[in-house]
Image 1 (cartoon, rainbow over the protein chains, first blue to last red):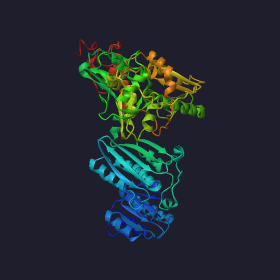
Image 2: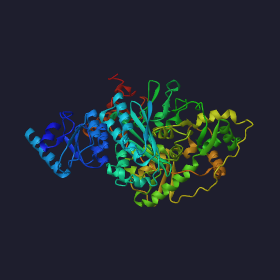
Image 3: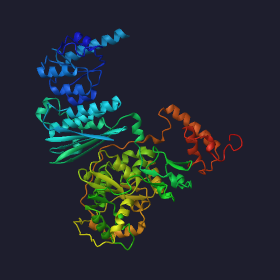
Image 4: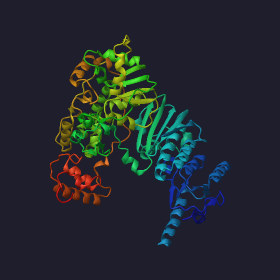
Amino acid sequence: MRLRRIAEKIGAKVLTGELGLDAEVDAVYAGDRVSELLSRASERTLLVTNLNNRQILVLAQLMDTPGICLVNGHVPEPDMVKAAVAHGTALIVSDSGMFETCGHLYESLGEETQSEE
Amino acid sequence: MTTTRYRIAGGDFDSAGSASGRLKGWLKRVGAESHATRRAIIAAYEAEMNVVIHATAGEMRVAVSPEKLDVEVSDQGPGIPDIDRAMQEGFSTASPEAVALGFGAGLGLPNMRKHSDRFAIHSDAGKGTTVNFTVYLNSQAAVADTQNSIRTLSENCHECRRCLFACPTSAVRVHGGRPQILGHLCIDCAECIRACRWSALSLEGRDSLPADAGGVIVIPPSFLFGFGDGVPFWRALAALNVLGFREIRVTSAWETAFRQVVAEYARQHPELQPVISPICPAVVNLVELRYPSLIENLAPFLSPIEAAYEEFRTEKALFVTLCPSQQTALTRRSYRGGRELVSSDVLRRAALPHLAGEASYDNRPMHVGEIPPVAGSLEVRGMEHVLAALEEVEGGHWSGIEVLEPYVCEQGCFDSPLLKSNPFVSQRRWRECRDRFTGPGRAFRREEPYVPRAGLRLDDDMGRAIEKLSKISEITAALPGRDCGGCGAPSCEALAEDIVLGRTHRWACLHLGTSEER
């Protein structure tokens, strides 16, 4: 599913404009530990996390991950948004917590799979 | 091979990740497979973050060849007092600041090991830590990297085929006047070098000392007695001084430390007895190739010469090897730094002119000590006996023996085919003076796991492998069974396998098809 569609479905705010929203995502990994996110991230993964810092962006850039979804309505520093734009990583924010956000994601990705079948 | 280095600033979370980012750019440009790049970057980023989190400064050094990427990340930091504990998932000493950023889950080191093909860690408490890892850049490279250190010189080959029959793993072929070693089967044991009367097989490596020889030199005991009975050991030492080496160390120091940890390991793991001592790298190769069920019996420590290599990792040092298996074990360890290898034979020739000179050995500190006896350990020497012993252990026939210490050479390392002196005489001379050469040497745990080698596998696909196996028995049955070696393969069965795997043709056999097929 395209990142744009995912953002719409879970009602997340997009902070980085149009950038990267056409990226195709087929896996979601949620967590707050860098090592775990690192070993799961790929060029088709959306990372869902509370980690509102530059390091999560560096990680996404290293692993070619198209997007990061911050949860709990975290507001990233303007510098971080700028850096995300500069590298082409989509940054979206969900107002719900980790559990709820993941629930929405699970549902919407599930629907998609069913409609494909 | 191209190398580069990146600096890493300790405590600087803002620019953390930049070394890994540059490494990634580098790998993209050389066109490494994306799966391999991904693994390399995961391991590199974890290593980089460890420097940022724990150390004051560090450096990432990288060497890339078409086959593999070697990375060394070293730092000046507090060091790791207990590496075994640090390697466990969930153990961390990261600061609250790092934890708040999502680090310090205690997964960094395990992640590095998981995402690399070879991994080693070395730490000095209070000084710093060094992590080495290797990632193969394409799926074929891992298989191809079962390299050996045997050099073949076709022009010397007389096709006598002694080497064919000497090889315990049927890795040698002689075709068209050229000896050929099948790398995936070779265990680097030197039996073929020993069998060759024409110097068509020898040890791979440099033919002379490095131009700027100096610093530390690590020699095997046998080197001291390699100049004939009339030449006392201190003359050999003096010659090394003349050649510019400021510190001479003998591997026996690491051997002592090694034996102790292996014995201790065996006591802690009675269920793994007999624990197999990895003192002879050729035996380790043999177990990985032929006895994979015994891999868990191998004690997880570096052999004495590898330990010495590890201990002098930051120094300019020359390591004297006695056989292909030692040579390969050392060249395989990633990042060479100021360390060089030379064969015992080359060093001997370089030292010869300096034996008769005025110089006398100036009696630098030689550490005196006793070699503690290790109870329950059994030495088994000689290829035939080692093979038999491993068979028996595999069959569960041994009990009451804590440690099996196998050497593929009949007289252990005194019996390398590179040595010119009588192994029995050398051993006696060594016994008379060895107390002068013990300690201090450290034992090192082996961080990279032992892995079964796929050399014997006929095909990646098991179904096809079974087909090939039946084809091989079919052809073997049709061959005369004389195992004459005339075809260049060591046995009729080996020829049948060569035919099925497309290495040669049926008409290579001198006895078969003289009438119809030829």
